[in-house]
Length: 408
Image 1: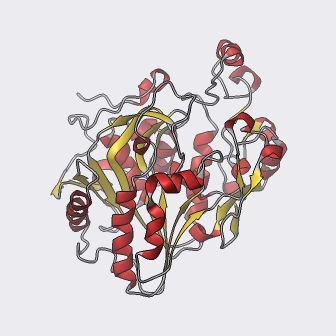
Image 2: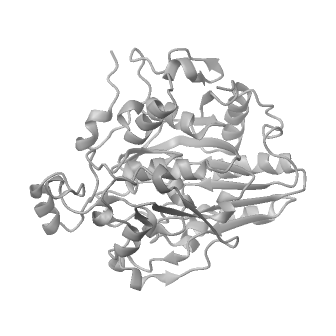
Image 3: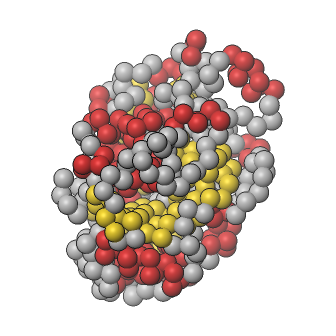
């Protein structure tokens, strides 16, 4: 592995004040071998299109959650986005384009999100064009009709169109019976047809897929369907046709499904006001979708950068109903996968027990401490993945307790 590509930096940052973030980023970039005064100089050249993708999954706290917390334990804080965009503008030297956007959850109110974050002002800040984009072609006007495609409302979508990737036999869903696949909508025919035989289709926002440089700024957060969500799971937000995203197979394992672990859970869910379908470690479908997204995304050669916002992370019932966890850190790398491996371990979760990460560890023959160089506050941290060290202790819901790292 290239030395620059296999380095992941963790830096302390205890608040979202501009000067605190700036100082932390300077230390972080220096630890990655980048010049803090223009850290992206070798990655971003004048004239390039740079896409910055935060996690904008929600615009408000969901009423179905059992508690209310700070929205910024769910979504990326605008101060981190702005600090990164500032440095992108420096590298572009007045030539090129910055796009900041996401495909949020289909029910998110983008106008509300813009008002809450105040991020639209960046469109007038730089000496290059900067566009803040909602990339969704469809939006859900109310959670009352969530899942019903005929009730969705058309939206502008990506101004640069879409890009389709068919993984064919390379998809991890290729050998899986597609007849039970469920995507975002109750109408499963579209999901099944997108993932049957050698048709394994994912439609990306072209602004993301065709960008010269992709900058991912996810949250450090747990997730009830895959265990943890950072860069790789965050690629769900790169997909415009949401019904192509297979989340589970309907039913219980006895019937070939992984929506619920058993009939008791299924019957309880039928009577419950709020259900958690596919939200258990036995979901053998969604992690395959995450692997597919990363494989699809990496088919095009591009520069990638990530700054994970862990100043305020989210623990527990992710992705929407987490509890604020002050991990007080930023995590950075030029490799999305390695950053996720380090980020998950820093959360106190064993990366080898997150199925999509375990797949890539095996596929790429990654020896964690041998192949990944980690620094904390600029100081090398050998044996970072060792069980002898305890880092942050993110809470996970009961049925995910098996993924927690046991320090000895």
